[in-house]
Length: 348
Ligand SMILES: C[S@@+](CC[C@H](N)C(=O)[O-])C[C@H]1O[C@@H](n2cnc3c(N)ncnc32)[C@H](O)[C@@H]1O
Image 1: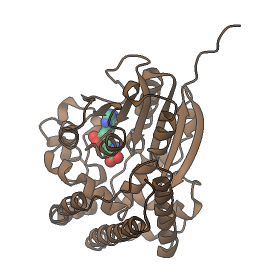
Image 2 (image 1 turned 90 degrees about the vertical axis):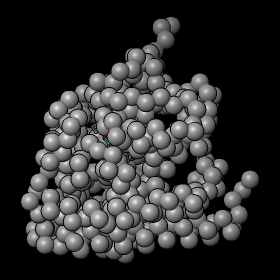
Image 3 (image 1 turned 180 degrees about the vertical axis):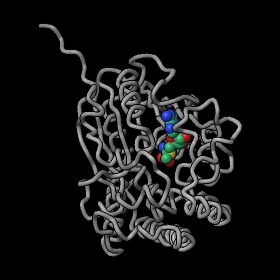
């Protein structure tokens, strides 16, 4: 059924409210950290104006709406869910002073003291984003989605939805019930929950190194059928060769050290079936949206992102050299790149 004008107005109202609500939380966090970053103004590239960011956000939501009109997914208008998620505000605000303390001392190794840390790779045992417990506790998993939404001022969900577009395109010619999608670094299962709400028949696996984040994903997907969970590293996936049709990875690669990034890229090429696709959705890189290059300078300083600077200049076509680059799509501060695993050439 085509979306109505009322739905469009409700969609616009909800997105505006989200931007205002999460934007205010972002400002609260920045205000609390105002004394932590004296050097931030000395960025290599100019920081974009608020007007430029607002225009780019409007473009993101306009495309989101066009995707709804094209029938790719239903109008994202679950007010009850939104209200429930908004309640994490209290925990987010309570956590700010702890984050600021780490920002001030550039402290990022507290997470190492967590019980499970020792069995995990060293690079993972950090307070990414200066967040409390890094990825290593239930408390962190509980507020993570709110933190991401606040960081992107209410645009994170719309940016993730854009990564579904190549999934929909791939499924045009295939039976979802016979298609396997793997979400690598699935976190709390936000993207997979969305995908399964649109494609309930799709077979899916959520893979993540963090047990508490994966537990959260399990909870979010408890009513979904055909989903398995793997507590494992992207660079050594416990999956068979050529067993996956669609691999997706959202906001993971910028957090991996360069060598691990290369190993993960190799393993993705291994698990994909010939003809399968890999969808990489991660932050924009230098030159993708030049007015926003200044944000790329600021981001790793503001939040602990030890490998981001190298990621922002990584040649993705080279990194995923085992695959064939098919397309790039810029969705505000996220780039969605699609790579295909070539089918072997038939002998004549
Ligand atoms: C920035 S979060 C992104 C989560 C989710 N994809 C999203 O859209 O919000 C990065 C996630 O990757 C996981 N992660 C980090 N390094 C990993 C690795 N080497 N293998 C698997 N998961 C990893 C973290 O536990 C975390 O859940």
